[in-house]
Length: 119
Image (cartoon, rainbow, N blue to C red; front, side, top):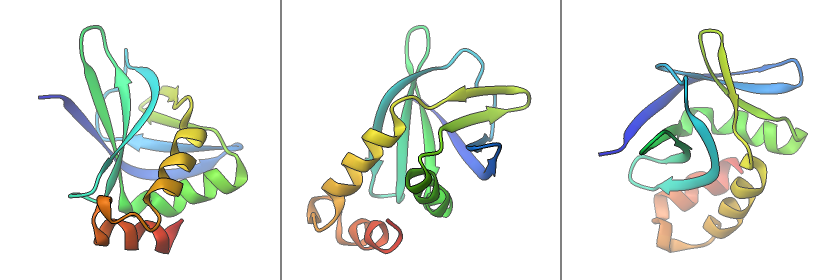
């Protein structure tokens, strides 16, 4: 099973959006890929490790911050303690996903409704 790290809060600061992780992020490498978890109403940013992947869970509660970052073209960072890692490729990948989800019942009607309401 892949390791998952939840984002517990988001803070706009110094021309960036900082997503606070629930646990250590040291050694993770951004992949630039995002998945959709329709069952849990989350987006999943994939981070690489030495031999596996870690899923960064972006829950519905922080979607308004993600929308703001997209609109203002703010870079996104994940942070834990003093460590911060930029989520490379986030904007392009997220914009493509949102466009694909809108009106697409393959993601489930509830997910489509939630995405359309916020994005």
